[in-house]
Image (cartoon, rainbow, N blue to C red; front, side, top):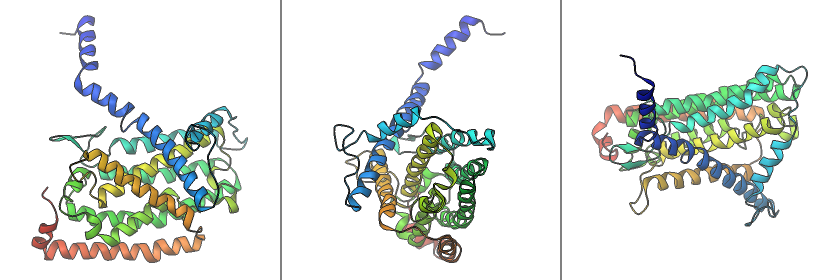
Length: 353
């Protein structure tokens, strides 16, 4: 029998006020959703600018906001909202306008599948759980450069095209060692599930069992994000702003937001794969430990912008192909030997699944 309108209405209200729906709303809107990401973007952008200013013996943001210019990112956000969106006449307008929306969407979706820690027995705080969440995050992490390449090419500007080509070269050189480094973690944990990967680090963090893999993954991740010294695709002194030269207003803001959202995602991934995720002393909740570790990783990535000069394109490619890939392969071969030859010894260091 088909349901009546009153029955459908009652089912809808029952779903809206159900525990599952309310949990989903909190996750999407509050944490790790819109409110948390907005707070993260404001704090990290402000911190990066203040940190760089201190290194350069400058003041940095100071006047906007009650504390040391803390609200300067909000002022910049409002300013960009009011700026005109200029689309070049000879640009591929569909792809040019699609790229900013796509890059923000991809970045937000990658955050939705990352678990943040246990909140109850057999209940992990995550927007959407899948046992292949590590693969999903890696896919979203590697899609962003392709969107940047498309946006740079669609601008029909020589500087944007140069930046897009540099992004393609960098993507090809650093995705390979990144995936190889992750393979070592997968072999140790026996799973693509970040929850199981973290649980297997209950006795010892994987950074101590995979030190070379950690270094390779950290550097390759910085290259994927285009953080200095791997910021060749933008290279303001050489190609204006690379792939983003023609973007303005809210479109430019979307690219910048996506960059910092991906920075958050990358830091969470590093913390989950190598730093024990949400595992920590019991005086703080697991979610708090996870956020603390990810913030430490973010600070380390930001420090690169203040302390290292930009690499040349040939140096960057040589570092990816000639150094990181061999090091990642050495870590993988060592992991294979340990897993196959000394599984009993390995079991003393790795927690149970």
